[in-house]
Image 1 (cartoon, rainbow, N blue to C red):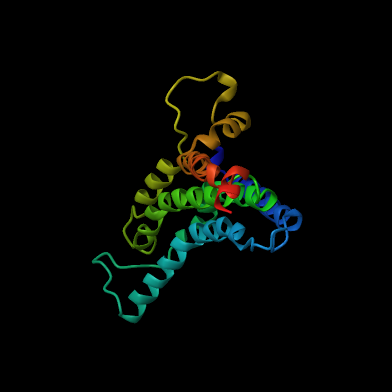
Image 2 (cartoon, helix red, strand yellow; image 1 turned 90 degrees about the vertical axis):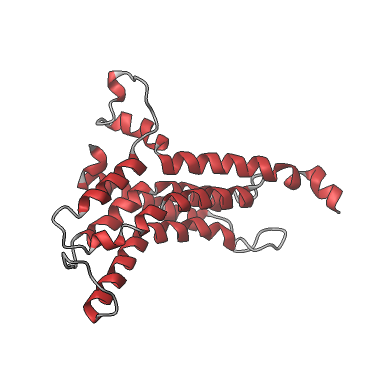
Length: 215
């Protein structure tokens, strides 16, 4: 599948970096017009970096713990596997929803209840990434099929939530199909649901009538 292609992964990462730089350059200043800090718009970017490299950092700490004797390795032993270097790219592509959230917040921080929606969306997507942290011991395991569990979790978090039929031109192996079905993967889809829910929850409080009532 294109998701497993190195060319696709590097292309997707390059596009995300361009989007981040664009949002950082074109985004609002650090302080909004009403004097409030916009530092909260950086939260999705921090979550994106944490989800991408966090599991490898934990795996590295576990490896150092095994190496120094502070932690007891399993009977199969341990090794500094290539997973530690390769998986951050996979996890970054899986978590492109954080980049979309960051760009949205940077470019439109005053859109309705953007701050509340950001927190709900970022929290939902972060929770979905928790299983990746628990895969860290498997990343340094010396078992022959140590990567099997990692692959299963990746597939579950990357597989589009679509169980019906689709036209031939929307085959997920094609570029068009990938663009259509990528937003239906669990992480970006539930992130979008969290954004909408946050907007609905915070909408009345951030409306002009709500501000008038509070004042």
